[in-house]
Each structure stands twice: as structure tokens, then as C-alpha cells.
Figure 1 (cartoon, rainbow, N blue to C red):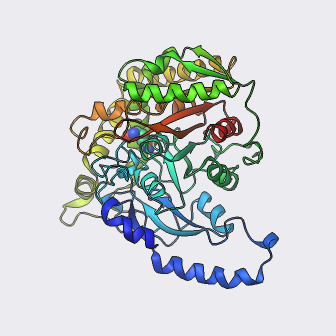
Figure 2 (cartoon, rainbow, N blue to C red):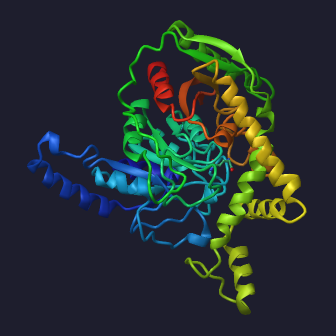
Length: 447
Ligand code: GLN
């Protein structure tokens, strides 16, 4: 809490901090501590965590960084929160994000931009920018983020911390505010790979409240972290090392690849030819799902309602016009358009077909390799304001992360050095579906 007080005036990584409540819980835990033997102590006993502000924590405000939910208090715990709470975790606050997780820089938040702890003139990445900045600045021990098209991995990379997007279906989405339901996953943002594995052990697993959570046994993610990686085969997709990538980013990632080779990993070039369509495909599918999911914010069910209106339709229109920011409106308009009669086949259906091709590309590659290595983002953290006027430029910063969501695969982002401006560079390891243990193992050894 002291560290939050110290860093928040500079960073703005939190939307809500509940210091008193957290202290009270810590005091109770402290008393219980004397009575418990080590065996009886839950895994996260008294451990403070911060949570991205699009995940419900009972009794805490959840804003999704939007005016439309400014005063919304969550009436329930998301499944991941319930599981962490049962293990003794204490939730100290909620981290800033792009409004409704739509963005790559945390600049679209109604509560102001979060700054990158490595350079306060730069963005922390997004949309889980508050989580990544807080973990990086040590004003959070660990945080949970959400990743629809890179929102855990890209900010982790910009802030020099670890971020894991689990396989689609590995972690329950119940209680995560839906953005694009077929892409969203909750995952850890941590200082170390081991911490990520630790949290994964707790948050993973089938949940009756999320029909898309998979009925697949959860391995012990901590068990194989130190395995010898000699003999594993890594794929280097040639399409990920061309166009637009900063030479320094490429250099650092290839240095990490060299380290893998020195540890006995066989590295081969592979091709993921449909990757070049990933951004376009994503920006049809994600807004389509978002336009439908955000229909619920209508001024009736949640907190914000326009003051002056004439009749119900006018109330809907004014509430949404006043409550949503520009990027959210842009997504709703794109999504509504691509789902309209007459355009559905040309855009939405076509995008779903390309999505299948992207998935098949990965499936093909994985016949030959155990995991895939790529950069996380083509650049390191960019300047605040640098891309706000050009949505396409902003969308392109997710070019290396988005295909993974379309294919539903697990991927981890971890630091692999600094560029000449002393900004962190990240490397991404992509795994086969439900094979988080391999990428965690490789990441841990590489770390
Ligand atoms: N930057 C992407 C977007 O704006 C991804 C966001 C996310 O993963 N939540 O949609």
C-alpha cells in the first residue's frame, strides 16, 4: 500500500484502491496466522493482488474504465476471484485499462492514461496497461489481466514483466466483462514465470458457470518448470520477422532464440502464411461480438443514465452517446455494420472462414514443432499520443499477438532485454492448445 501511494501520482495504474479494507483483512489474516500450521495455510494466505478493472470482485467498484460504469459496484465474484479468495488472497485494488479493454495503450480509459514506469512519457501498452505498470513498478505483487487480442502479452512486454494468455477454455470467463466472448481469456501478469504458474494452478479449470470452459484436467503448472529443454523443437515463423518490426526488437528476440539453441533446443524456420490476415480478421470478429455484448449497457440495467431524454429510445441513445468513449463507439459501429443483413456474408462469415485457416496454419506448424517463438510487438513502448489519431496504426501494434487469440492457443510474453532507449523488449512463446506446461517450462529456463 505504501508503494501504491508512492507511485500512483506518477503512474495512474489503479482506478480503485481499497487500502482500509485490505488492511483490515490483512490484520485478520495476521491473527489467524498464529493458529495455523504451514500445512493448514491456504496457498495465497494474506497475499495482496490487484485485478484488472473489467473483472468482478464482490463489493468493489468495477468501471471497465468507462463513464457508463463509473459507479457500478460488483454484486458477485468472478470465478477466478472466488478461487483466489478461497486460497486467502487479499484484493487491494483494480487496475486501469483501455475502456472495455479496447485498445493497446491504456489511453482510452475514462480515468486517464497509465504511464509506463520505464519512461513516464510512454504508454504501458494495453489494454491491461494498469496491471502491467503496477507489477513492473512493484505497486502490485501480481495482477490478473484479460487478453482478447494481446492485452496481457503486449503490456507485459512494454513494461518488462511476464504475461500469460491461457488456452481458450482453460480459465473461466465468468465474471469477466465480455468484450469478444470467443476470444477473451483471463490470465496472470507477474514478475516471474513461476508466479504465473502459481496463479494458473489456482485460476484454471472447468466451471459450470462458463459453458466454454474446457472439461480438461488441470496439470500442476509448477511441476515441470525446471525440466531440461534440450531436444525440444522450436518454430520461427518467417512472417513474424519482416515488415515494420524495429531492428532492435528483432535483434533481442533472435538473441533469445540463440540462448534457446545453446540450451539444446532445435530451431527451425516455419511458415504461418495466413498470419497476414489476422488483424483484419480480428477487427471484424471482435467488434461484431463487442457490439452484441455491449448492448446490455442501456441505461436501464446498470448505473449511468442520461439526465434529459424523451422516451425510452431517446434514453438509450443519449445514455450510450454520453457514456461510451470514441473507441468503444467505433467498435460498436463496425460490429453492427458487419453483422447487418447484406454484409454478414461478405464480412463476418468470411472472417470466420479465415479464422479457421489461421487456426489450421498453427495446427500444421505444430505437427513439426513443440512451440513457436516470435516477438510480442513490432516496437517497444511508444510515446503517449503517438498513435491516438490513427486507429489503424494502433491496431497494428497487436499484429503478433492477435492470431493466437483467433486460434485459441496459449502464449506467454517474457522480457528478453532492452533496446537502446532502455525500454524492455518481450519475446512470445506460443504453445499447442492446453500445452501451457511446455511454454512455462521454456520461459522459466529462458528467464
Ligand atoms: N488491442 C486489441 C484491441 O484493441 C486487443 C485488446 C484486448 O486484448 N483486450 O481490441
